[in-house]
Amino acid sequence: MSATDRNLVAAHAEVKAEIARTDTKTALLLAFVGAVLAGAWTVARDLPLNLPAYLAGGFGMALLIAAAGLLLRSTRPHLRGRHGFPLWATLTPEEISAAVSGDLAADIAGLSRLAVAKFTCLRRAVDLTCAGGSLLILAALLTLGGAL
Image (tube, rainbow, N blue to C red; front, top):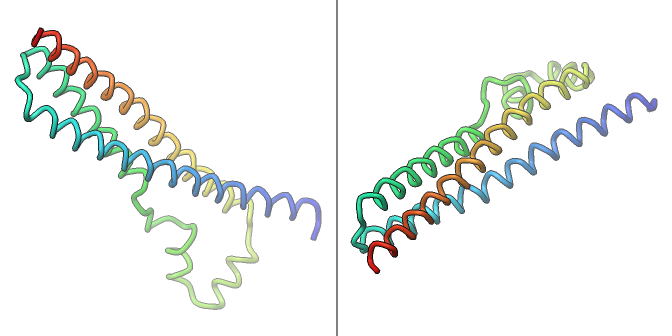
């Protein structure tokens, strides 16, 4: 195996590992957002909220729901893509052999685009989660301030 082939195989493994890391981070953040939404709903339903707290809390919940939507979009399977399982499921054994011996660089480029799209959704979801959480904290402070 030449040095170029080794470098391509290493790059391919690196891109696949980055996709796996992004999917893991996405799953953890989705669980966190779900827990925050459930907890905030449970707490807010039992408290006497004033109008500013309703507005801040409602907008914070909306941002968290948007973040969950982005996270779900990021984890949605890309079944019409040309990489991975969907590709192999549509090919004959001979076509699989030809595809495997084909251009690894093209596969790396396609997987890299997929990784960037997943990472972009994750990054936006993190930003929305931070903003939504901040608004929920503001709603809690407004509620406590109004109760005093």
